[in-house]
Figure 1 (tube, one colour):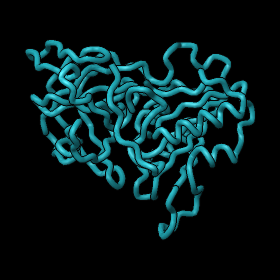
Figure 2 (cartoon, rainbow, N blue to C red; figure 1 turned 90 degrees about the vertical axis):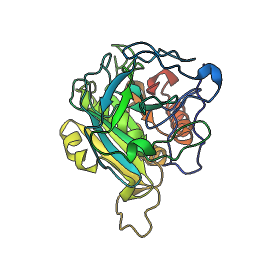
Figure 3 (tube, rainbow, N blue to C red; figure 1 turned 45 degrees about the vertical axis):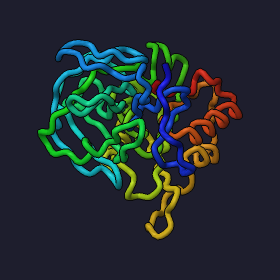
Figure 4 (cartoon, rainbow, N blue to C red; figure 1 turned 90 degrees about the horizontal axis):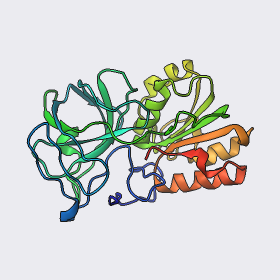
Length: 287
């Protein structure tokens, strides 16, 4: 059963959606309010049945730290072991203790790293979601319930990058979260990697303090600002797909694309890949 996606916005750096029929696995997507899709509280350490995907197995955890990570974004850490986390791009569910609805959040840290890290967009509640205010407004020590890791990440098979020498990464807004995970996982080692990362303004761009470390890992970082007026920004402007298209793809036959962003960006990148001769199966999302 598919999840109801968040309402889309015409701006390319709002709450990002993936190329998906079901769910944006990056910042926040919540189960719809239909009775069939609601979870039922089970005894602790038991299972909670949902109308879609694997059943989450809830564990009691708490926020270790919370800090600003950009305008409208919070960096949150949870010091906990996580079953099933082995690939960049995986996600999990988090909910307020005893709550009926849960959010789905991409894991920003790499598999094996401690603590777990998340980049969470401040989102108001709606008819079908509790929003994220209870979490983004929390303090260290706040209680929460967390599921096991879910999904197969970006690289769903061990040979997903076989024959690939170049990997282009695309992210906007909080979509950088699972992209960060795959960068720091080591899964792209030995490849020529370029990241196109977009935000509306420089103040809304997260992880700028990690760009140098990513460059040391072999990732060329191209930040892109869509509304630079009055910000003093001197780098690339516009949208990530347009900047990448202008640069061109040198060897389409040996190139794969990993992306996490809103639907408009994803569709445009698929079109760019098709124009360049990159088959659809090498345009990879984390769902």
